[in-house]
Amino acid sequence: MKTEVRQLANLPGHQGAVYALESGEQDGTCFSAGADKLITSWDLHTCTNLPFLARLPDPVYSLCYVREKNILLAGTSTGAIHIIDLLRKEEVKILRHHTAQIFDIRYSLKQNTFYTAGGDGVLGVCSLDTFSATRILKLSTAKVRQLDLSSDEEELAVACGDGNILLLEAGTGKEKFRFSAHQFSANAVRYHPNGLTLLSGGKDAYLRVWDRQHSFAELAAIPAHNFAIYQIAFQPEGKLFATASRDKTIKLWDASDYRFLLRIDKDNYAGHVNSVNTLLWKERLVSAGDDRSLLVWDVEA
Image (cartoon, rainbow, N blue to C red; front, side, top):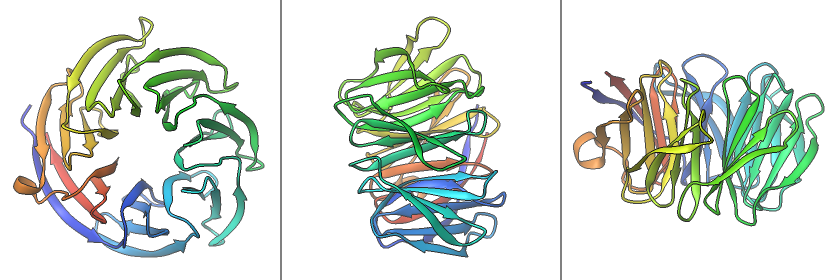
């Protein structure tokens, strides 16, 4: 598979590291947030800043846009979850059931629930009706780093700082399965669009592929990066996926056989000069990291 990448824009809008990217209110838009405590909005077609901007009291580590309610959830370094009504342009509630950073937030309309992953080792299970916590689950003595929902929204995958990945019933929070996935921390976890495998990335710099049909047996262990992997993002069509790393690079992979395709770096593509913390792949691939920039990429395969 021949893959070509072209940088469309470098969007300088933050004054600190960028930790979170999320889909925006309209197609072709996104939100970003980070250490400067700002939430900004971007048009990815014109590569320009949009009017929406919010300033929170603490650095923002995670964002989750609940499209059906037009609500933006923002998790901060102190463990607070700010609930912002985008129609009214105001904060309507703050949740404080965590005592450390909120590394990830995911929601399920089917379960009428959103989930919060904390640096305190806690998973918060919250109602989309009342925007309040219904269960507080202590999953690990280490951090809960990342979450992903299966396509049927019945299973929640949880990557933990002790190297384990947990599979929970999305409706009840009951643990179904747990396995050791990485030496040191498991940082990233994503269900493959084919529904057959689960991908994970760790502090050990390995990309690992797990068989959902056979008790999550390991199908592949790929030394994908030089330092920790922080994010895995699939192309909407499902043909490709990307990984982001502390080694300052983005790598592109064939989703059918996990074959390495292309390395996006500073020297060859004017890529990031510091850690790449997060990715968002909708119409275009967007990356962000410690260098304070959002880079917008056109990827053809």
